[in-house]
Image 1 (cartoon, rainbow, N blue to C red):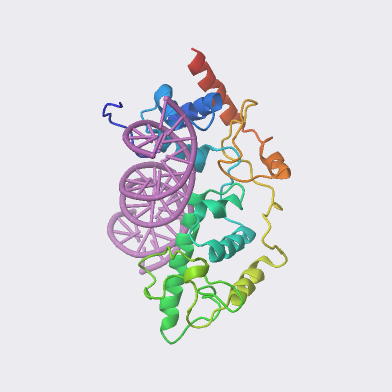
Image 2 (spheres, rainbow, N blue to C red):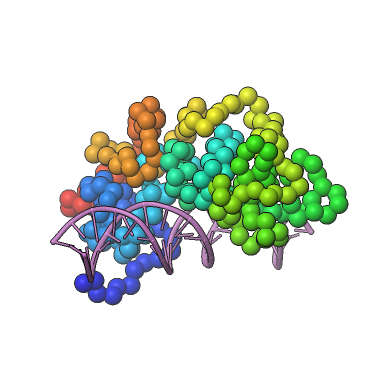
Length: 247
DNA sequence: AAATACGACAACCGCGATGCG
DNA sequence: CCGCATCGCGGTTGTCGTATT
């Protein structure tokens, strides 16, 4: 059995990242406890996995969500509720954590706008999304928490949407979004139209094989987009890690 | 220039699901 | 079939950078 041990917590250092990347490169992204142990990282397997999935995984897009992605998130959330990982699979390069954070921020904004608009003078456009809609599913926070503050996670989804308030339809939402993005039309297809910016770090050595099931469901073209990218910086790190490993 | 508020993102925690001996 | 170990997911909290006062 595992004897109690003090595991490191908090932010990861660059060196820890290097190590983790190296070991994942060697052993794959599955046996996290094992990797945590053999790597000498004083972290739990869980922590290692999280770091990998949310930050180090090759193919991660970073930076702001595109309007298309935002739109997709809204739509999928309306459909599936807080199934972040499921939603994330439809957005290659985005993690469930990222989407969750985005949603939280987004809902907070909406809540604030709602509050504001609750007072007589409301800016018509600003509060576009708080609800749902006419022909679409709702995406809003629980009606019971009108303050908006309480829980940004509304659990959404078909089941508990509805009964929304002052008449923002999904159409309105889309309209608003459309204004900002003009001509990008998407349906519920994954959006790959925009080439991902080079991931900050990404070893992507040949030995990299990432399990398709673990993150995104990638079609061939999608994966092509990601794989070739190599960051020199990280590649060097990887080499270092390798050296470290082999002594 | 300093203090405060806010937003974005990273990380941890708890729990249920799954796999394996 | 059962119990344990591990993984994955969703929710929550913490940290840090930036904008505002």
